[in-house]
Image 1 (cartoon, rainbow, N blue to C red):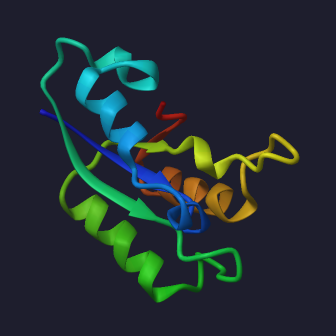
Image 2 (image 1 turned 90 degrees about the vertical axis):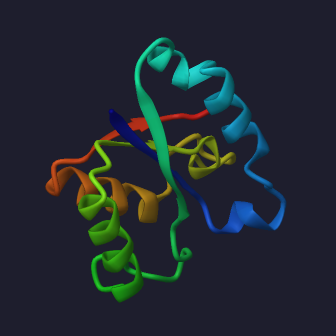
Length: 113
């Protein structure tokens, strides 16, 4: 079984319920359409620890990534909320987390719904 996780922006949690990400997951639509008919499991839904944190020095983030690795997550989808609306560019903190995931052999896919 392929294990998937979703990473979202902490600031987005002020207005986001995660409903659109979970709806897309449950319906295997949008960026999750590739999993239709596959044996996949959503193992985690987690957030960055904020714009002011350096994820490489953040013990909490390192613990989150250790946990993902330990439970066998193969792919992390990066929520649409991680792209800055004003620039259309992926947040620099999320970019660092993405790179940390890659260094652990965990694939990332930009986009959820």
